[in-house]
Image (cartoon, rainbow, N blue to C red; front, side):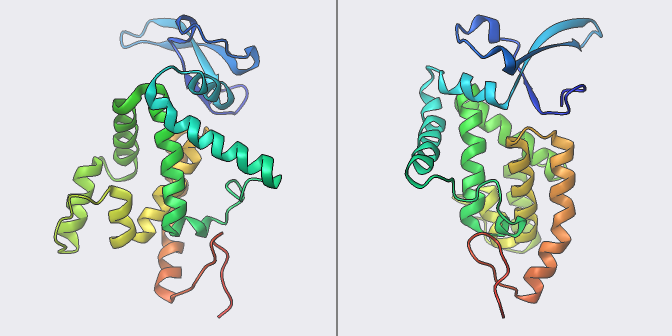
Length: 218
């Protein structure tokens, strides 16, 4: 979070050596402390600048993000709108397709920046922040043991949460969605956790939703 602007920015120490032209309005310089406590000036970019960087990346892993961006652009060009991705009711995060859509954005951003290892690192970091320090693998194992379920090697953490702890899965999906919009990790986790009790109450009551998360008439 940029202290003066109140907006999410991403660290970009390597930006001056990429050969990619990023709009000046997307760049800022800030002072940061290294491990020894020495102050250094570094570059940060906002979400628009990050998208510029990924779309111009020559890494093959960036293709996933470019494909997603093309899908969004095509949808806007043909319909004049993008189907509620930024205006979904929070309850929509209880739905598996929405969770997959959010994960696709997270993985696309991570792939574009750091390739396969970057995507792994981001998912591990999100899981540790949201699930009491557990990696995705540790969290899935914990859930299988907690609910006395036979382990499924093919299940991802979001899929396992959707099956076994849907309220937690929905809260984590909201947190990931907020991260892609530039919010700080601590804020994203706090909001996701705050939604969990409400999600659980809705699930316990058997309340149904439409594709956008709006409550259906009984």
